[in-house]
Amino acid sequence: MPIYTRHDEVPVFEHRDERLEANLYNRVAKRLGGEGPQLRLALPSLRHLDIILQVDAWIVVDRALGDIPLLAWTRFREDPQRRLHGPVASRLRLFHAQAGLLKQRVLDDLAGVLDARLDAEGGGRGQLLRFPGSG
Image (tube, rainbow, N blue to C red):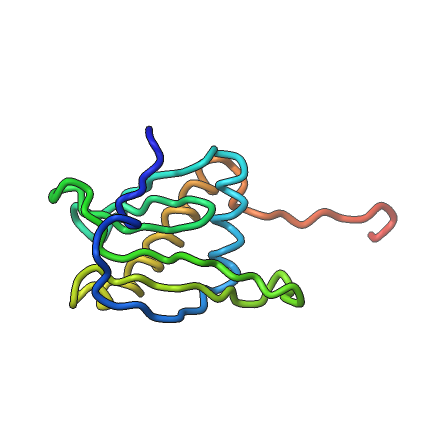
């Protein structure tokens, strides 16, 4: 699949500074490290919408409209002092006046899809191990 670039070509309706939850950002970064330059996931509660995850952008597209971008997180800025649990600053591009209404549902769906994939791969459930001699 060719790298998606339309989010850099379509006019932007509005820009916003955002902070992404560290847990989600870290899971996406880890997933991209093992999957290649981009990963495309369907968003279960948002019919016709997919999210394309790239190292430098997360783009929500509408499949029914020829993959037109609706919103995109870009310019991820990890503070050098950021700890693993700290939020990550980013720039949110809105390509439609109502796109901001989708933001939280997209992030919730993305977290759910990543959790389901982790469970399917057998890594979603932790287990307690006893140390030798602990009873």
